Image (cartoon, rainbow over all chains, first blue to last red; front, side, top):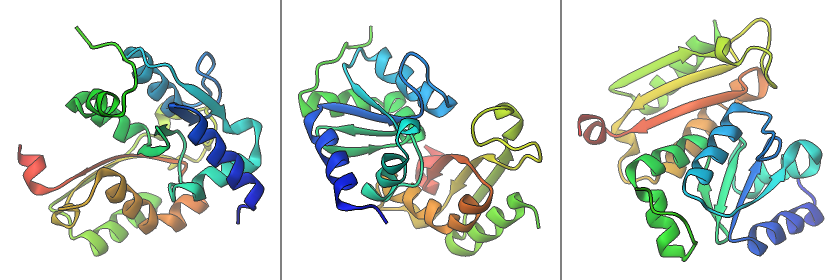
Length: 113
Length: 91
């Protein structure tokens, strides 16, 4: 189980950033194809996001799975709300739901041409 | 039983899917974190089931992950999931 301190750290991270991606590696050097794909989608929309490299912190890596009851990484959060993993983000990007979500939540992004 | 067969059995029992496609994509992830020489670590799973009706994408996938928890713990590193209702699949 995750201790309270870890949970609080995750919670603070999620709430302090408009858009935050828990991922393996960094946006510049992703260390997993699914994380890389999610970074690419966010970059495509020109969204500013912060990222947390779960490979650097075993507590966060385990804790984030319990935080949202979601067993895999990456995980995308927008305005404190869990959006989904790579497949969901991709589906939402393709269907137009992702830009719609950014619009509704007041997150700045670039409208695709 | 292979992991693909276990996945098939669990999802079939729980979701009575109209369509269930399980593709082992482990070869695409060779050498990556979570990959194993013996394979069966990465699967693409397409499920069309009426059981998904009225559920958000997040909850659909949450349920699938819960059903496959043992497989994920033991061996499977990642799933690429498509979770559709029959109406969505037809659309």
